[in-house]
Image 1 (tube, rainbow, N blue to C red):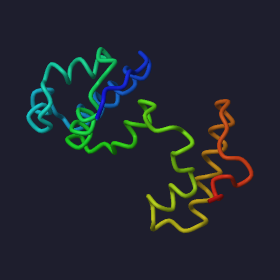
Image 2: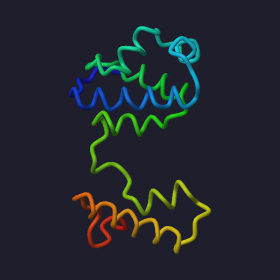
Image 3: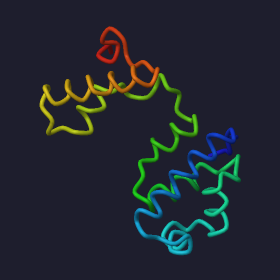
Length: 131
């Protein structure tokens, strides 16, 4: 994969994701380096948002070692266009197969309330149900 440049905000956001998950798992950067095969100095620089043109394969290796879905990282990096991300309702159905339709509707309603409270907006007029 070729390198793709990140904005400072993207690099910092992804670095925070790596750092938080590493700490949640109780791993040192050295241990993460051994698990992922990524150089320890690279991990430190990524966590501090210092690498603005990372190798996507490095993200994949770290994500696997940390148990983070690579799609989450690639979306945070802007490598997956927003229009190609799954909408909330189909995502919930796929991710949480045991939830019934009422639970999915409750979650969707709650997400809409949070979004409105914080000035965002989600899918309109059931657009997440369209093919």
